[in-house]
Image 1: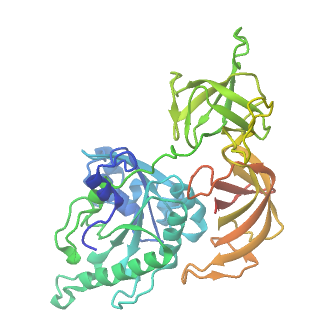
Image 2: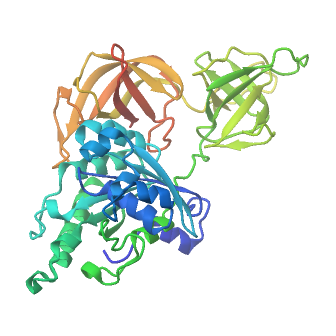
Length: 466
């Protein structure tokens, strides 16, 4: 793959900046198997983009050489064991763009941390260690964590997935002429394996690029012709990737996070409380009719405040304060949903007292068909009850049935009665109360839940509504 096929490039050609924003800060993660060089890659990006202060460089330098992985491995246990445990975020910028990097752990037992980072990422760089694969074979097999992390990023609607084939420099030995061309052969075979896997899994690949995180080849500066690759460097690719567009095309859905009371006001023409939160979908504007969940009451928006308390319309992805036209019982965890008239089969006579019924644009649901990325050591089995967090609202959820699990190696759907730790499967849930749910493919906020163990209070699974 000599040129990036990212949709960002297509957007540049078409000029569609509304849906393909390549100027805002890009939030991306590095993921993949253990010791593939994720932390080292981030260190290289920070170092070569001149985003590291001299005192930071001195703190991670040993014998005159910088230990690049320690730029992100901040926990003492990480430094002692040489592994990444928690997600570490770092910030840097180039002349063209700002970036927020999340360094996700590669160990299976820390998959929940990787899922947390991927759930809000615009892009993912999946590292592949060439030295761990049988690169001499055209039909080589990929590591399980490479497959698992790629599938999880795809399920979590990470817009752009870039495969970075690392440590190709380790296959070259300048002292042995017979090794010449090994890196190019390895990159070619690994690229074909990645493309075959992505096609079978339905993953759209933005680019496949050969890199050396340790030496810096193709990370910030392009290494023309290295490994038979003449495309852009990894940083050049990242600068062109789009951020995830906000769900502004859907009707308003607003989860209430905090209620601000100013009941001392003498103005009774509208409600005397401000409901703060982040608009999930659509836009909040004055005069809009809304229905409250779970109470079912209806009201109209009398005032919309931005995060600086300036009045005006607030679109999805931004924080807002909403004041309704009358006093209603709303608390943290409730939802404000756009109210739209429901079309009737028969026309209403002009002198009829009946009016067309109205309902929210999003029908609440109690029974859900979902995809679950299971992260608890205790297996998921039918009949168990968990707390489910949707937005800021907690409801009880019972596992009705496990439909099947996904084999990450063959991508086949297998019959299953339980989901073990780090397994991915399709499950049917029954909720104690209805929630405002949309498929995750339509909305990241409305289509996602978190399952929490009722006894241990540990995060048990990430749920994506089908």
